[in-house]
Image 1 (cartoon, rainbow, N blue to C red):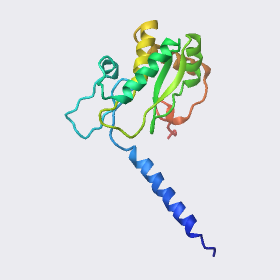
Image 2: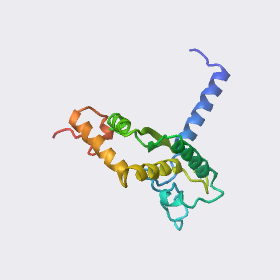
Image 3: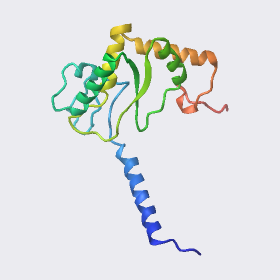
Image 4: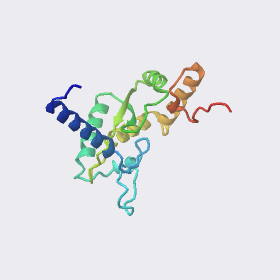
Length: 178
């Protein structure tokens, strides 16, 4: 029987602790839906969720996260860069129609990117402002609801190609007959 060195055992234990912290830190109750709702902690039920699209019109001066994202978005728009964003974070899957959506975005001179949401929520700091600003800029150029139309077109293209996707991205989970 071989003995492990004390250093390797400590390293293994530390790795397990860090992994556990990462996995359980993202388990807080939070709400966000396609860049439309501010990420909120569910502990105080009296705090209502508001739309990020509404919030970016009147940002709290202490909300450094949102202000920084808005500044970056404004800079991108001024440089002619419109980005079709969709949320990505712990527990959120990539889009099943991502390949088709990227092709459609190219046709409309848009870039496609995932907007990363952290699982650590800081009180008074809002995530999703970059995507909300970009959605507003895209709607100003192409009309209201354009992102949803593009997503639906991409989904139709995916179905027409009869391409395969992972089972967990299906609207209805596959069932074994019988």
